[in-house]
Amino acid sequence: MGKTNRILIIVENLPVPFDRRVWMEATTLKDSGYEVSVICPQGKNYPERYVELDGIRIYRYPAPPPTTTKLSYAWEFPYCWFQSLKLAMKAWRQGGFDAIQACNPPDTFFLIGSLFKLFHRTKFVYDQHDLCPELYLSRFGGSRSVYFGLLRMLERATYRAADMVISTNQSYKEHAATVGRFPEGDIFVVRSGPKASLLAPVAPQPALRRGKKFLVCYLGVMAPQDGVDYLLRAIRHVVDVVKRKDISFALIGSGDSFGAVKKLREDLGLSDCVEMTGRIPDADVARYLSTADLCVCPDPLNPLNDVSTMNKVLEYMIFGQAMVSFDLRESHYSAQDGALYVTPNDEIEFGEKIIQLLDDEALRESMGRLNRERIREELSWEHTSKELLRAYGSLLGEPAGTEGR
Image 1 (cartoon, one colour):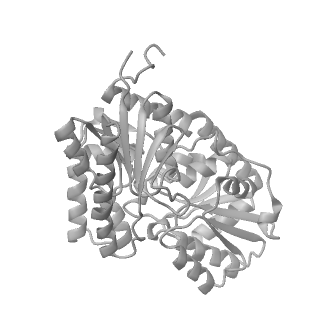
Image 2 (tube, helix red, strand yellow):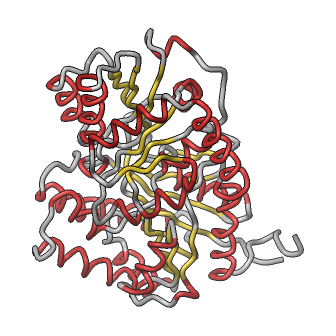
Image 3 (cartoon, one colour):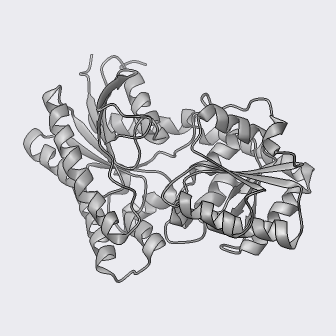
């Protein structure tokens, strides 16, 4: 029988278990025989500083304020680093660990990994959720700025410190191999496919259409790079130029730009036809996505979005939804023939494609079937998680009790 391998996961972006990818990683590893602890920030609905859920130890620290300026963006890095180091030391005293998995952003946790590698011979795993330099370019611009150069330096230092890299898609793997010069044999693609068993269609609720014939849904984060402002301007074209008054739009989610998006909705005179729900429970998300006639992915073309897998795309697919999306590399890979694609950043064309798809019920149904099949057969977490277990098996060996399975 092998030993029990222990893994510490550090994440800064969201609290756990709200961070769905990290929670799926943690529970998959735990269910496969690993001992798992997580360090993350607190959240509105996750106030406990320490809690055990489903056998996973979760250590939380007070979250930093939302990043709205370059200064606040920079301050978040050292703040989260010191908080995470303090809790990593606490987790070590309470049982130790064999590997630290750092989920970015930010790309500063390699220093924590390096300290534990030096003094305790732990392994360091880089789970790259975002390309931080490209994220900075997408929010602020300035490829020659000091900030951009610092972010690239931190990213490369993280690659150098890592024993293994987990990438969310093939584009990120190529980035790790080329920009990071990381050995391809130690890069594992673990896509963020949703867990099909947790998100399932329910009976449609016509009341969610708010008296309209059609319902169009957006689900996701609302930050400067997410393109919800593009969507609102596309909706203005649909409502004010084309004069379509039979469509209700629901924007589900929140983020740093929620207030700005709400103001833009009011400035464009769209409050009557655009509902903004904020963050809502999964059960309510299921009701909206089961009722919707189509869903939208307005993420504009920028250095980050083109190579990033959008979770919203995969979640729409679980509910058998046809989509309208800007034509981005990884979004196209995920949805393939299950979406109508728009010239990147063309808001007028985006609005026109919404109308085209709403008016073609047969095409919507065909796309929906394709999307359900692709999730079921290839892209759900039940499939993609196998690569996570293969990665850790190669790094640490099989955990106790798994030999001979």
